[in-house]
Image 1 (cartoon, rainbow, N blue to C red):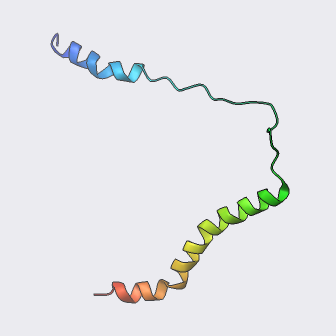
Image 2: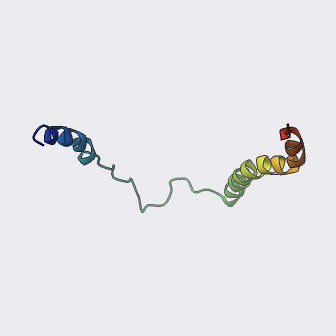
Image 3: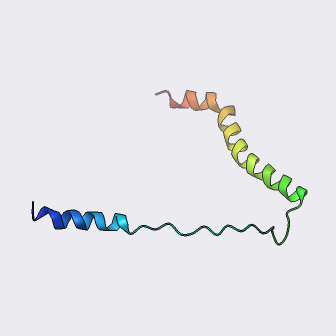
Length: 70
Protein backbone atom coordinates (compact mmCIF):
# COMPACT_ATOMS: atom_id res chain seq x y z
CA UNK A 1 0.00 0.00 0.00
CA UNK A 2 2.92 2.33 0.65
CA UNK A 3 4.06 2.15 -2.97
CA UNK A 4 0.54 2.78 -4.24
CA UNK A 5 0.03 6.07 -2.35
CA UNK A 6 2.51 8.16 -4.44
CA UNK A 7 1.00 6.84 -7.67
CA UNK A 8 -2.49 7.77 -6.50
CA UNK A 9 -1.30 11.28 -5.58
CA UNK A 10 0.21 11.68 -9.04
CA UNK A 11 -3.07 10.73 -10.65
CA UNK A 12 -5.11 13.08 -8.45
CA UNK A 13 -2.80 16.10 -8.84
CA UNK A 14 -4.00 17.28 -12.29
CA UNK A 15 -7.64 17.14 -11.20
CA UNK A 16 -7.15 19.67 -8.41
CA UNK A 17 -5.45 22.28 -10.58
CA UNK A 18 -8.28 22.98 -13.04
CA UNK A 19 -9.66 26.48 -12.60
CA UNK A 20 -12.35 27.89 -14.88
CA UNK A 21 -11.56 31.36 -16.22
CA UNK A 22 -13.72 34.22 -15.01
CA UNK A 23 -16.47 35.15 -17.44
CA UNK A 24 -16.24 38.59 -19.01
CA UNK A 25 -19.84 39.69 -18.47
CA UNK A 26 -20.69 43.35 -18.86
CA UNK A 27 -23.88 45.14 -17.90
CA UNK A 28 -23.20 47.95 -20.35
CA UNK A 29 -25.13 48.22 -23.61
CA UNK A 30 -23.40 47.38 -26.88
CA UNK A 31 -21.18 50.03 -28.45
CA UNK A 32 -22.92 49.68 -31.81
CA UNK A 33 -26.50 48.46 -31.44
CA UNK A 34 -27.74 45.84 -33.90
CA UNK A 35 -30.62 47.03 -36.06
CA UNK A 36 -33.77 44.93 -36.42
CA UNK A 37 -32.86 44.31 -40.09
CA UNK A 38 -29.46 42.90 -39.12
CA UNK A 39 -31.09 40.69 -36.50
CA UNK A 40 -33.64 39.38 -39.01
CA UNK A 41 -30.92 38.62 -41.56
CA UNK A 42 -28.79 36.88 -38.96
CA UNK A 43 -31.65 34.71 -37.71
CA UNK A 44 -32.69 33.86 -41.26
CA UNK A 45 -29.19 32.75 -42.20
CA UNK A 46 -28.90 30.72 -39.01
CA UNK A 47 -32.20 28.90 -39.51
CA UNK A 48 -31.61 28.32 -43.23
CA UNK A 49 -28.19 26.89 -42.43
CA UNK A 50 -29.93 24.16 -40.44
CA UNK A 51 -33.10 23.72 -42.46
CA UNK A 52 -31.70 23.47 -46.00
CA UNK A 53 -29.47 20.42 -45.33
CA UNK A 54 -32.25 18.73 -43.32
CA UNK A 55 -34.73 19.38 -46.13
CA UNK A 56 -32.30 17.97 -48.69
CA UNK A 57 -31.92 14.74 -46.74
CA UNK A 58 -35.67 14.39 -46.21
CA UNK A 59 -36.40 15.08 -49.88
CA UNK A 60 -33.90 12.41 -51.02
CA UNK A 61 -34.72 9.90 -48.28
CA UNK A 62 -36.31 7.38 -50.65
CA UNK A 63 -33.28 7.36 -52.93
CA UNK A 64 -31.04 6.86 -49.88
CA UNK A 65 -33.15 3.87 -48.84
CA UNK A 66 -32.97 2.32 -52.30
CA UNK A 67 -29.22 2.73 -52.64
CA UNK A 68 -28.49 1.22 -49.21
CA UNK A 69 -30.18 -2.13 -50.05
CA UNK A 70 -27.52 -4.65 -51.06
